Length: 226
Image (cartoon, rainbow, N blue to C red; front, side, top):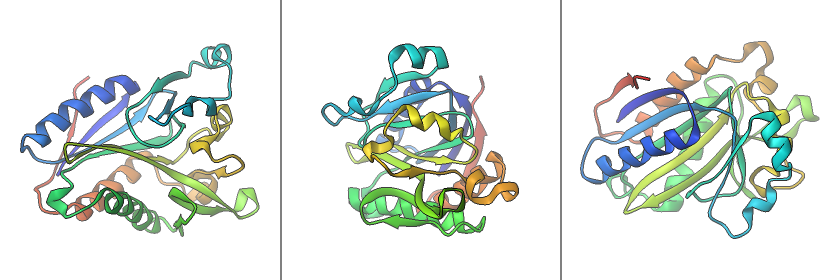
């Protein structure tokens, strides 16, 4: 698996990189993992009327410098921004004997295993996709630390996961995250305080776990030139 660190990139630009990577992998090239931090953006998936979960006004979003993009992924509304690590695995599901559901579960399990390296006891939630942990800053409530939304096109995955490391959680108040009213969102900063790893540390740990989860290819790390 080729691991590509895109640095900080606007959502639409990263989407174009995904499309290019998808075409290559679909035609037999090495599978890829794209790692990126996005400029502030709200994205929502293909479900009908899902944009109703963007509750901030267009004027308020413009004032804050938050873009809004309808994506072609599955899932509901989420926020991406600085301090959040987004990972886009571009892999052939048949090559790993995975159904779509099996692929989603593998992503969840990979993130849970990676978070355990930093002392976070993360878990799945039977009621919602994603990765969750009990947040001591929110009364030990189960809160989402990692959102997940994918698309499978011609057997090859796109989109992926968004892990809150040091994200400004107040920006999630602009939306109903993942359409789950009343469910809390958290970050590694909330969970670990001064023990919070850097984005670069999380990138390395996540890339290692992803390569284990989708083993079978050689690995390399490259930064995309700006």
